[in-house]
Image (cartoon, rainbow, N blue to C red; front, top):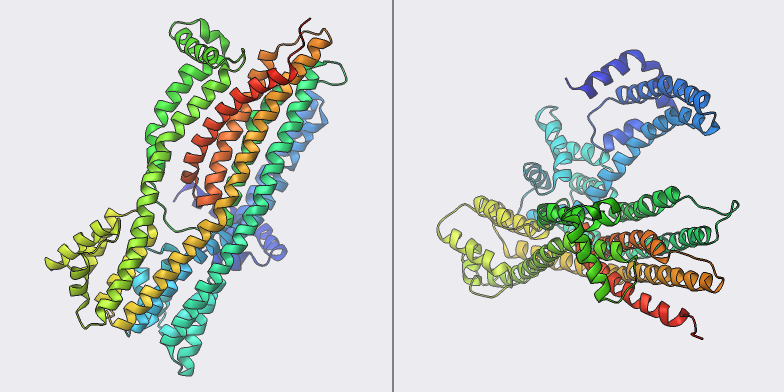
Length: 589
């Protein structure tokens, strides 16, 4: 028994009355836990939340009083509200779990519906198709729900139709619930189940295409908020700090520590928050290609070694006097001199190079593997249509695959040749699919071949089955095309925001320098530039990740944009520095 189980048992034994009171306050917690698939009794969960709240109150209240007595600061009493946050988080957690499960289920529903419809044309009942999905790893969330139905049939002695109804009622996805309940109702009334599944699947695809437009509008609003928060908040912060440092007074001063906290932590954290919000707001697949992230992790030590040698010395200036660090810092200084920029830009240039080294390998990997995955999926769609037409001539499905292997289907051709060769060797279709799944990394092509193999292996591979499969595959590709077309223009907003932020900050610093020179006041422009530009470069790189997340639904898609944003940041630093000198240079006597 682990610590969590032990604590849950302790909380249930000692705080059960609090847990029951909590369930009366939030009576929907049991339903949310069931929808999320959490195998925990509601009273045990509520008692655990109550126990955490009471224990945190016993710790936080004396600590708040002690801190107040020691420091005399009334803000120390805010520590006493920690139990309130613990209680609120505990109440909200089941809703978050249910929402996350519903989102993942929604992403799998179109493909599960396609599978059920295709298999039904081959005479396979949807319940048996669900059991096959339960034993596969392709759709893990659908598989969990299907296993519950299988458990009710094998252990509870319930008939399959009733088991499907019970499973559907406990699933948080409305589309999946309507699909399963409609199937059960059609079967009980003696209707055409095959026709129902095909029509319902087509409706799900049509609905998903409409949702793509809604997602695009939602992401557009989010990007507007990102631009407003990132740019306006940054400019206000930088302006206040520049003025407070250039014209110090007892009434207007912003401590450097406060600026560092906001500029280096809070502002990048807000950008990371937008990435998270975009992630939970976008439709996604159960599994994504992890090779670009693995490439990033493998090359990350080299990037951090570069940061330690070339970036850190400009933030910890004492290191520049040490052997080897003086060489690396001088290299950055020479690069700054070659660009014709004044002192203060060294740390920004080093940061730009660091982000390029950090994200460039992952960007190359994503560009290579992303293009390959798209080509495989497009080739598979073309192959399924040709397979459908070839099957109508009367040839067996296996013979059609062998004959079509001579055609060109982009990146899918090499996989098709291997599949045809394995069919010629007499290898089982299930083994062929498992081998194909090991060679490919995109989830869409795995789903397509999985449905194809089962349609042949179990459903017999009738021409009508292939016709349905080819039509659904074309619809799925069209959904992906619409999603990319809807989201791609939104990535311009992070670009514009980051570039304007860099240029405005540099011009503002140069303007203050020349203005104070006219007023005969000394000011360290290098200090300002060193203090202001690095966080702007960091925000620009993270904005590239935001652009990639919005346009491709994956953070790995932002590696390329982070590199481009860093390069544009370097160009903007040079251009804005030269522009500032021309605009605000003092006239000579």
